Length: 220
Length: 175
Image (cartoon, rainbow over all chains, first blue to last red; front, top):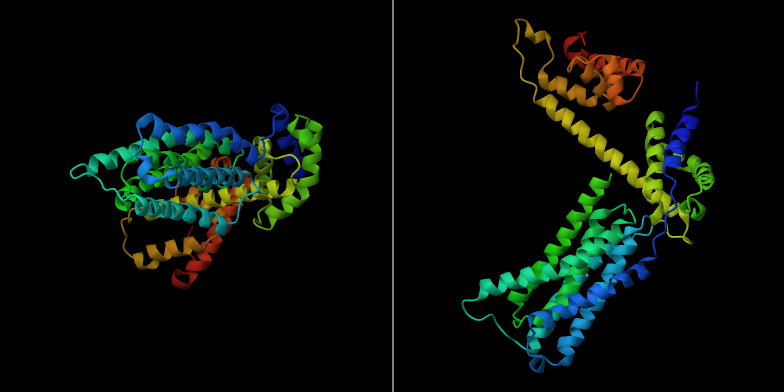
């Protein structure tokens, strides 16, 4: 009778032998993030230059471009974290993950408060719903290409926890898109910014998580 | 590992030989059925093969390998739980049969379900497939990926266990 261990070994060997093509190893996460920098720059400058921008003279250089640059860098750091977390055995601790998933939205709240303190502007009467729709739709549209490319890069590593990896990719895409969109939107009232820009970030993060889990399920 | 990524089958063999004993130990500590350990080991190596591009050269291999082995095991546990939950749901949906006279000799349905839950899952599955679904042991063996003899043995042991659990209420009952 065949030894079960040898039988298993032989079965695995046969399957692997049929598919032993050379593969190119993934680049380290820090270098893969660089591939996304052009898309991230495009996402950040599309809104203020392609859609239209608020009055930078009122807001000042630091509270407009300075804060947006900070938000953009935060987005890239979250993206690097997502790509690192995607590599099996290289995941960050649960505590660090939760701190990121909570800390990034907290920073968005801080940015909102600072912007409102420097230049308080409100939604014109009767246009609240229209503004809300625009400020949910556009950040999601701008974030979508970043989310797509980031998710594909992350999923190539066969993450063992696709849900959190996808959520991080979505969060990063949302934050990167918002770094430009906050310069395009004239309104700084926290109720509008958090209820629409913030909601868009949360929706993109959720979409990232669902998409990654779905890709993982299809692939298995 | 780098040679394996370059498509060297010999390197895969060395990779297998080096990691097989410790991965087997890792899985055996979590799953006591030797047949299942073999299946999980095979699945782990195939998963490692599918995701070999994700290993970053220069980093230690073991954290990568164990993260994947752990995931394979957790997915297996999730699958088993889902299947058991589905089987228990199906079982609870069985309509109440026509109760013949003298039915007080028979076990109460809730007691039967409770006893069934105490029967080991492997045996319960074989028992239910044979006695409730009416499958032959050959069909059960094909479905569970085991030998027909093993299916018969599992079902028989589950029947004995069930009788033992119900004996306090009804004495010897047929299976």
